[in-house]
Length: 410
Image (cartoon, rainbow, N blue to C red; front, side, top):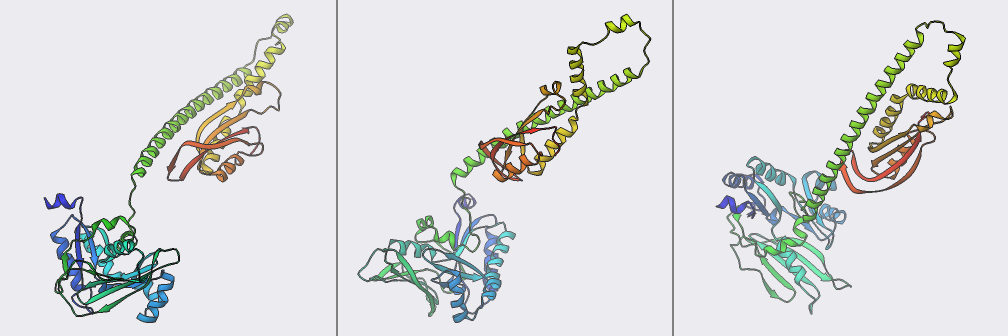
């Protein structure tokens, strides 16, 4: 029954060090024991403020302050700490990288899914500061207390009437036991109590205001993430993309079939040409002048014969190869290919027109794809695909149509 419950509602756990100067080993050992007992479950892990550094500023302003007060340079912060921040209100928070990596490694070994890891006070602070309206005293201070430590968040109203953070700091105190529920002691001061025992490293913990998860503070200050939440409409997009991929796959299969048929026709034409060449080389019996006159071809027959010869001699593999090379060069997905050979029976310099249609990623790719067919190629038009799709080569949202006089050398 517990496994069924935690499959959709994660455990809520509070983790703290045995004292302010202890290493991470004891806390990680307690975490490992918990993970072993709850293998395969999900967990929200609230961290004690003893491990955290908080500053009411963005990281670029917080780093100099941590260097000044803590003696931690920017390079030291980058190597040994994990930093998360809020843009509005400006708040930066850092946790030891060794602790975070140890928590995630242990969870992975026991198949425990860490849904969230961050400051224990983030839910209550967010809900409290967002609900505090204009007061007779514009400044408001939040006291987040736990055994041996208090985290202070001081806020005020800006010119637009929005509450912003001015300061964030911590002060040590004597270890105490569980305290009361969060209450507002005096105007301008709100006290939050973690409600955990001073001698417990790891405690099953119930957040006093779970609905505050809806706001973005917890997501932004997640040391195990930040986690990307999947919106409902993204599944609809996935289904649409799969349908588009299936449609393109059908079109590609039809194009491959058409190409195979064209190659088979080309082989038959080449074989017929070869047979005609062999027949022309065979000596023929002498005929009388009257018979020779009867066998002379008229103008219509000569034009038809010339057209057949042009069809047989036309370099079909070169044309098909050029079209495939241009498509491969720009990762274009060919959706239509036609060649007008009716002009071959006319003038000797006539050049048949090839019309091509393809799905491309952007305008620049469409222009390069058209130009890749050589001089004389021109784009007839381009518009958005009715059903865009994505592949390993990128996102395809454009359809382009081009014409190419295939007799022009690329």
